[in-house]
Amino acid sequence: MPTSSEIHYAKSGDRHIGYQVLGEGPIDLLALNTGCNIWMDRDDEPHWSRFDHRLASFSRLIRFDPSGIGLSDPLVSGSGPTIECWTQDAVAVLDAVGSRHTALFGVAHGGLIAMSFSATYPERTSALVLMHCFARGARDTDYPWGWPQDVIEHFVDAVTDPGYRGEAVDDVALTAPSLARDVEFRSWWKRAGERSGPATAQAQDLVSIRADIRSVLPLVDTPTLVLHRVENPFVRIGQGRYLAENIAGAKLVELPGEDHLPFAGDTDTVLGEIEEFLTGTRGTPNTDRALGTILFTDISESTKRAADSGDRHWRELLDNHDRMAGRQVHRFGGRQVKTTGDGILATFDGPARAIQCGLAICDGAHQLGIEVRVGVHTGEVERRGDDIGGIGVHIAARVQAHAQPGEVWVSRTVTDLVTGSGITFQDRGEHPLKGVPEAWRLFSVEV
Image 1 (cartoon, rainbow, N blue to C red):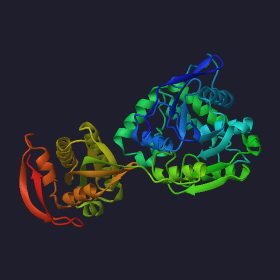
Image 2: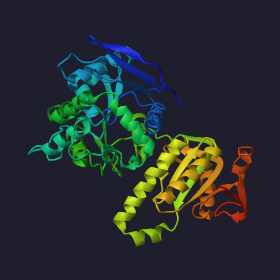
Image 3: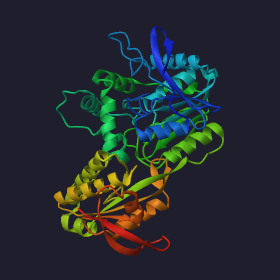
């Protein structure tokens, strides 16, 4: 797998533009934003890093910070970013890396740059991939798919003004609903968003809001793939359909899902479509196998509790449980893979931390007035994009199913690995694990 390269700089006029190159594939692919106000500084976010490294597995992936963003020089005082300015930054970066024929991948306002570049430099553009892009930001009488003006004003103020006191906007839930309960992602998102400052974020948003490049679309004469998740609430599907209808020969692929950020949700399908469009073949997702410790949790008698509590109260209780469990996973150095409706799945580098996390989750759940069952097993884990699989995951789930409310149960493998740690166990005997050969000896953690 290609690793992140060092930072280099290209000259765009008087400004220095920071860029990186990942991978050595036969296709040059320029990444033009990925649906938010964060550009190049993203490798410490695991979902985004896996997404980019999959792109780099079949291309030479070129990433950069445009003028006024991140590692690049600021714009002249009093001037804001424009599509033209950022297009020239892209030219400077491609010149610096020696790319004369490049595919462009744009998301949201990154698509504005991609389409402008293609219309201006058709001889340098091999293909366009546009995901959740638009030709115009604001709604108009002849363009009903844009954002209404009151929605624009509310969003920009709520997201970029530190002194805003109106109704809050949860931009994670809006743009990445599948990660809305991921405590680690929320923490990263907040930190990353604060690096650029409110004025920079607002300036980027204004580029999208003021954009109207409908007149440019007939000039785009490049093979174009338009990708759009049909339930995306942030950029409506009508935006993608408009692009496909007005760019000659464009291919529209409507995907299930609601995540605006392409690296959230079902990334394998997105990446497969991009790879097939650019290379003619669709590779298989990277599957990494490694030893890991898997933790499963489940709320005891959740169905009965839901019926007794009522939908609204139960939903609030689940949200509190998910936030609590996510905090504990983060506290003990684990990675939350996903929520399971009434529990979570997480992985750890070692079993001792997983056990301590399981005990903390049991205690936190008890304080919320519920009981959870926790199962822990150490075995082979197959990483499939953002998800995991393999027999080790199945065993951990079966161990959890045998656990008693308020207890952490583990497999014999775990007890052997933590010998000498001071953690003590009670032998609970042999149990059949559904779908797993032979009976397994299980143990509960003594508190």
